[in-house]
Length: 331
Length: 302
Figure 1 (cartoon, each protein chain N blue to C red):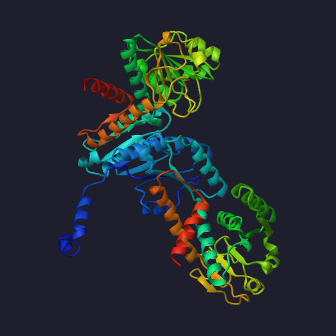
Figure 2 (tube, rainbow over the protein chains, first blue to last red):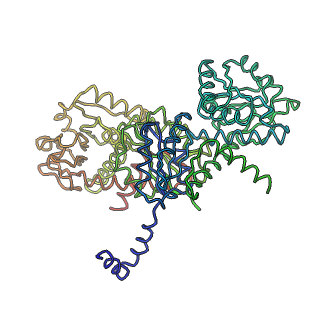
Figure 3 (cartoon, rainbow over the protein chains, first blue to last red):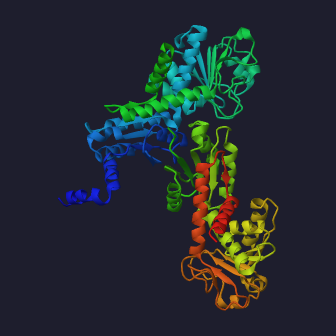
């Protein structure tokens, strides 16, 4: 009762406090950002703020065993009505671990106490989804072909973006090969592990020298370049051996480009330096990046809007990307 | 709608300094996000992650703060961050390890003001003893003062360490344009006889300059102390002193205490954090910029 008296008092003396205190009753949105690494990615921080989350809470060095307890701590401190105001983001560099963490958090929910969770380690899920969707679009529009009929190579294939790209491409029916620049073992291990985990068939190869690269790309329809930033993986001279190559996509925005002849802003432009007969089109990093940006933004925002809790991974990202292009075509 | 202001706060230590977090939020940054235990080799990756998730317009509302405890490491990280930018994708960066750059800037700015007002002179050609000068604040103060034309001698308990730091300050931070010398703490009784200015930047609670030293300093003009924990680093200089005559000084020297310096430090850090919010083009801020804004503040509030 004392509280009521106090509140009745307030408008008289501190009218500005009343509107403020009402605002405080409306809960601020919180994104709990779990990361197995020592730090979150500044990319994800910017994205989360820009999607409208009021408060970001970084949790670093998170182990898989801790995810259950962290999730339950997050759900039980706010009423079931608050779920739209609370969500969880899973980062890191390991896409398998991120999926395990996503599944663990899903199992830790106690309906109606549940919140939305999104996994996007190193932005790999949304980057890969954007990359594959862009390539699929150009393949269809410029070459009237589908991923099912295509042979795809993923350079830098053992990194997070490469692995997610390979899994999505393989799930869409492309015959997909992971390529490592140093070690066949690394490529084979990754192909086996992620093939089993996501129930797809992945092939593996090593290609470090220009000769090896020239040989392996000779019958490829699609090249995804997801190698380290600032390193040229395929030169124009090497690319001339890719007689079947239809679409090449590069996610490296730091010069030099991973694939020579693709400008960062290219979306479906012929690769510079290749003969017209080759008819290869390229997709540059900023073109992929702008789609990736939209996907991550939309998925993060959907956690604030959805009526029921969502559990988002690369499949949702790819569906969203396809929907994005479908809407663009309709309008 | 304009994007919210985000400050990515990097530190090599295991935590950010709550001082810097408060300062960042009070300067108007909406989100202050910590990145801890950061290795210099990780700076490039973190910076590029930060720049590629916003448009160049949004990046004007994004910046990076570099904390930590080591001057050289922070300067290296500032350089690495600057080199990692991919124009037009670039953001402002401000290094202030342990608050040392803004503290040093605050100290030198007040000392300069005291010289002008009480002795009608400048830092040019003055002999400075930087006592306990091998730490981050001492290093930055030595470089700022030397760049303003003073002859600075860094004093440490171990001469070889002081010599190493003096060389680092001259060559690395001063880019070879300045010469900072070194001396052993045991010899400060001799040096003090020809000293115009004393900076005391040693560990808290240790007296670096005794009443006897003050009495034997015939040309001492200003003595500044960043230590706020008693006993003060300079005998007779209280934390609250702001240009107060030091008892027993034959030359009428004035003392500047930690809280007077702290006030200017606060203003300098606040101004640099706001500079990043307001700048139209990316800025890369270190102790030199801290000294510029500290000087402005001291001049405007004379």
